[in-house]
Length: 244
Image 1 (cartoon, rainbow, N blue to C red):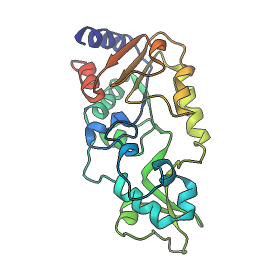
Image 2: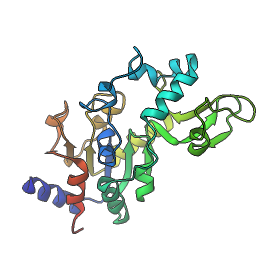
Image 3: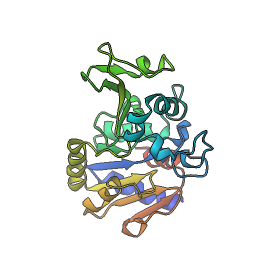
């Protein structure tokens, strides 16, 4: 492991345009559950016969807003969780002028809270909500102060500014992510199984020779990487920036 860390750190030192792409595994050290691991959302016992995909879908939001918000509050809201070493390591790389963009599938806003500024949120954020009728903005505190379906002053239902299952990614955010990757001289991917599309296909836009994959388990793209590091990404990223 130490040899791999040393090789990766050397690549970081040599690079000036690094892009990071992360998934749910980036936030597990903060106590946020991922989706597909043994303790993830997909393997949790549910008080319903519906799948997590359906419970977090636009179709379910429309059909049963109360059920949707009950599931969201119980499974996606962690007000006491804090950014971990991976988030802080990435913020440090940005401050050093090396990291140009963080592309994330997460909706927890931890990258920004750790100090990163150029964050592309493919799936939106749980920090922001809006009325589906008049588009008035609301924050997470407004939504979480009640157990009921949040309503706008106009009477419309307030929804999270996240990409639900059955919805398309924001094309502007996706285009910005692709542009950042194609310009990168180093691409670090971490904490993602790379099975959810179209986000997983982003790796194909990188054509350099400094592709690093950091994950607990193998991915379908390991053979594409110049370096594969197996382990907890919060620990790995902390080691990579140590001494920089």
